[in-house]
Length: 288
Image (tube, rainbow, N blue to C red; front, side):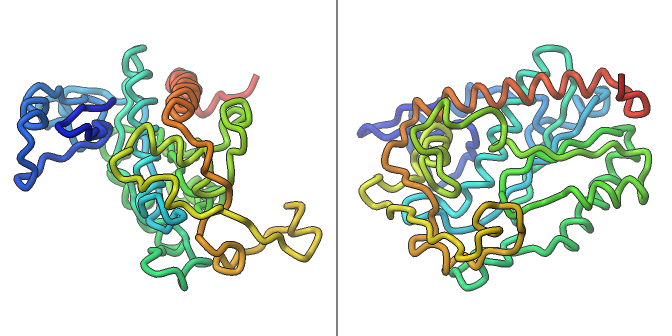
């Protein structure tokens, strides 16, 4: 959702934090009319929370890293937060009580430590955070947790397995929103990182944080010399500065906000249906 401001500016309302430094009267008046979203933990309140039984908690998990020259370091964070909110809203409106936890802004970036201010947390740190989050949720009767992963460097599969031993009461799963559907149905060349797909998404949800496309690099990727790694059936870490000069992988030049809007509508719709199915399924009886 976009708010028109003076001098042709626009501001995304997917994530809007009022600031006393911002004196635009049109923004101030709009903030006064905004409604609390009851499915967003950071926005709701104790009066509502104490009397609500939640079916599922959503934990968006992003990263803080360079995204070509034209995109914000918080791209993965903003995407995860917006997609979790859109999906939860759709599920809430279909009587599935979801609660979106605050997005974790740091991901695994061990291959980008030489890129200035790309922030890294190790998988062991991620598991420690998950352990504490799960402990809180279980204390309050929430036994289903969906990690909305928004960063390709994050991989929660083994953590889910370990958590099933440490906290067997919790059903925990992870989804990669960027793997839902076929991105080729929406984009000419989706790209892997800061390409057409991600640029289109940010054009839709946080356009004021984008530089003009004329400022973007081409996102050219250098392929691995070893065939197994190149074809993807061998896995290793990529040293990012050896792969790309501008930190992007994928050409963003054909990105549009309209493409991002259509894609996010599909993605959030698919996640919504998954949440409804999960809410109505006993984890101990999941197979036909």
